Image (tube, rainbow, N blue to C red; front, side, top):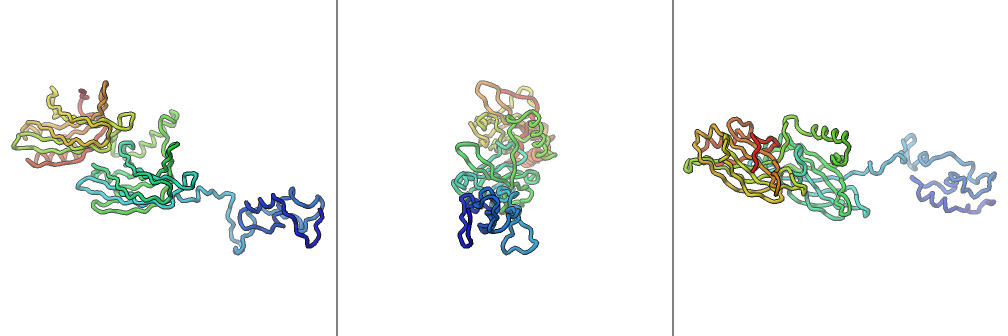
Length: 391
């Protein structure tokens, strides 16, 4: 086909498509035609009206208005996912030292990464205390549907958080997308060392979310990977803690001069380890005043079904003199009730003159302050105190 001067050069459909998808500023049609010789409207051997084809790539197209010598953006190597922020999360933390309560107020998030086909997400927030059993201390907000800028304005509370926890533990806050048809998707997270908090002072955070790939579950990994996973989890633990935490228990002690004995109150437990397949436990508490060879000092609370944060509010009385009490120790164990088989041990703690830390402090306060009730939170560990007792 011959093209006379002044005639409009026809444009093929392939050239129109090239114009629509070509990155950067659109070049004149005659120059784009030079990039597609196989679709050229001119017969072979006929020179193009715009001159010989030039070996230009889209990356070498000069940007209009750019200064000479300026570096061009590498469009081919640009990853839209890497360049997209995961969003920001705004929340507040407050630690009440007297009540041993850590309150996390989840306020809002902005600019979350789209996770659904509609370009939106169904976000919710879950928090964990590390180190610790994730299922036992997980708290979560409600789900806000179809938004990238959700507002929760919810308060999630941990009970039994001591000053020692504040100095050692880390709060992990994750934002996830709820999916009813498949597994929930991870959007981003942030981690806050609790030592940054000052007791009695509310601290607000507005933090960019970060990527964090959770460890795979042991059932889906090979033996070698399971070993690596266990190693990484151990690195996450504080070196000072040799025993595994299994939850917390709030105990009250009082030596009653009128009744002539020790009053032990089992108030409540918090974020116990899950022992059943449903992710919960059926906990109850047993107490012994040691030494007790004949096991006559056993007291047991009622069983609380399907909970990791049971409230008991029960009291037990031991008839004993105050001088004799200096030679005894109080053993408190938490168990998971199983019908028709042996009950599972969740955790235990021992208070006495040979104890350490908070356990020793609580015991000495009880012995020194007659007729005064003292309450303290205690950490349950997987070490069974003394011998194994069963019902």
